[in-house]
Amino acid sequence: MVPEVSRLAYTSRSAFRRVLAPFSMPRQKAPDNPAGRLSLISRHLAPVYPINTPYTVERIPDTIDTSLLPKNQTRTLSTTTIKMSQPPHATLLIPGPIEFDDAVLQSMSHFSESHVSPSFVATFGETLSMLRKLFQSTDSSAQPFVLSGSGTLGWDLVASNLVEAGEDVLVLGTGYFSDGFADCLRVYGANVTELKAPVGTKPTLAEVEKALSEKKYKAITVTHVDTSTGVLSELKDLSALVHKVSPDTLIIVDGVCSVACEEIDFDAWGLDGVVTASQKAIGCPAGLSISFFSGRAMKAVENRKTPPASYFASMKNWTPIMKNYEAKKPSYFATPSPQLVHALHTALSQILAKPVTERFAGHKAASDKIKKAISDLGLKQIAAKPDEQAHGMTAIYLPENVKGADLLPILAKKGVVFAGGIHKEIAIKYIRFGHMGVSVLDPNRGDVDKAINALKEGLAELGYKA
Ligand SMILES: *Cc1c(COP(=O)(O)O)cnc(C)c1O
Image (cartoon, rainbow, N blue to C red; front, side):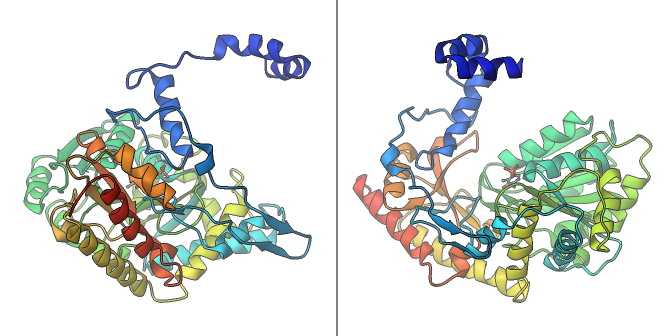
């Protein structure tokens, strides 16, 4: 079928269209048509328009103003030196992908290398060892994983390896991302109980204690920062509570929007798993699922009564590979992306050049400044309580008469890209400002001031007075 299509494609355009016709789908209004939904979601590829999700009530128009799209990047490549400077572009301040450092991007221009060559194996091995430091872990029974995939693959890892069909899992419900984790767990047969908090809050310790006393859970999952609301969950006391009232329950953290911007003290807090992705606070292009599991979690995988419920995401398949890489021994289960691993190596080297606690403090300082500016503008956050507010992003309620669909393109014209809302209950009522990585830690960039000013001006242009 495929060769047939491409042969015809070269023969004539109308023949190509005729062949493809049966596959093209009529565009329909979301949310109940999957193909229509996909086309709406993929519109976030145009950076100036707010994202549509299956839950967004208000639809963004189809036309895209191409004058707002970034111009092509220019770069010079030779066999010996690579110079690359990022062309001027609107500053990407969404909760991932974030702005990337030049050196991180440059390391992706590495020449092609065998994934089992000594040089690449050394790079991968060092990358895994650096992850231990990022998680502040010295426990040799803990295991890092770096797999090709996005943050979502971390959910599959947990659901298909740590939990067996029919086992109970308690999911702390904070929004869009905890809903997704719960869905993923169900796909693999877990019996999920969701303890849902009202929008903009998290379940209390007392509620968690009560839930844990009612059933024996194989695992509890918590979304450290729920990127749909900007709610920060506290991990240390939560983990202590679980260890006290349900000591066999594995404590699993979705840290996709928290690793490398919020403090995580993996061993000291007694966590069993943290899953994350490359493109958020770690500041490496998207494409890597990064996770870290305790010795106890690794035992749970080993002691499964049934085989892991996935093949590519099987921790049994990947564990020896990760151990070999870290021991600088070539190994193969499925081809990693050498270029992305080089970028991650560079990003982690930069992160670990200073104590990680300094990095967390830097994010907190920037976040405090942003939150103050937001409240000085008379705006409210989705996460109302200061101790429940994330430090790498802020979800901001729009004023009564301002629409995200109007404000976001104005901000883009001013060179700042924010994200629209994705929580199904409030999607069109708010916007999201991501403030992670170089945008907050590199004082020369001025990204935060630029964003705050753009927001002030943009709101004023839409008639809002603080
Ligand atoms: C972004 C995000 C995810 C999903 O990660 P992808 O890389 O988009 O697959 C999951 N959980 C949280 C908390 C996130 O912020």
